[in-house]
Image 1: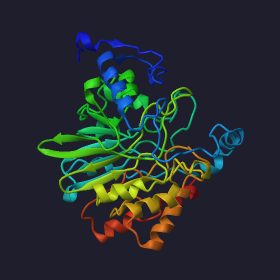
Image 2 (image 1 turned 180 degrees about the vertical axis):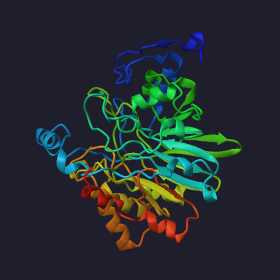
Image 3 (image 1 turned 90 degrees about the vertical axis):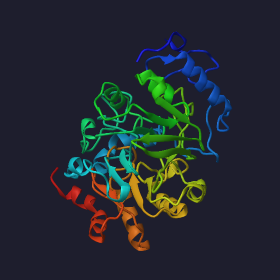
Image 4 (image 1 turned 60 degrees about the vertical axis):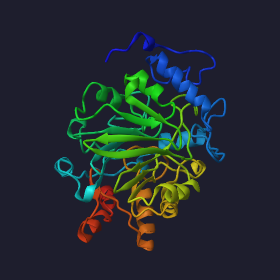
Length: 387
């Protein structure tokens, strides 16, 4: 895919450029980068030196605080699974056919979900890497293999990417995608404003990248079907290094089809905007909210299970699929604590909260027997095995 002379690659390093200190090596294209900078400057979220949340946020304890660093370094055994996390063995065969009633979500671990909605197939925050880290030899290591390999995904009409953190934007995964590891991928990626600079430096052609500010949308079309991807407010932050904090935007993503609606929270803290999103873009058939990698000191930028459940209720979604847990050691709690807490909340409220195994699916029109299986606390047996 050759570029015209006006789009020749270069590394932009002007002091006024908010992306002048890239966390990803490589070059961006001049024309696309200039358009990106113009859009960033026009965004209501842009504060001159970084993007900002609707409501002020702060970390009551920095992740690099020596007390927290010591707990991360020496508390790993109590946070890691005591045995192997089971994978759903039927994932490959299940996604080979069309979803019942036009809707199926297959959870592949952490925040990676294959969303099949009204004839369109979308993949959220793809992470197939061994570590959620800028380096291959250190950093949080995954607890389980992926239940599907990239080449087994089949048709992917677009990848939707919520923000640039390493457990969501995995450079090794993107390099594999660029080299054709997922032959069914169309090449299209829809993401938050500014994140395209990272993707370009990794090697994604700029014409395949769509960047959205909050409230903006892009229609993904496939074989006569169409789903609109709309960026929504979230309460988080961004950055892949010490010098690029909040230089790119973060977002939730509403997936709006002609018959079904799905919400993907990305990473977020609690915000009244979730109720507003439910009123303006819902009702959602399924909402995916993050429940893991939380800490009281990070309450403004991560939900945890209690706040995830509250956000789900305030949004008015019909069902909840919890994500962002069980794959990486990113916090100080027991690996299954988020799932166990949410399980209790759902049981007490008789709410439709589905917690399938990694590689498991939920779908529209499921029988009561199938739905009951999605409620089973499969994680309790993990720490009782020998690994």
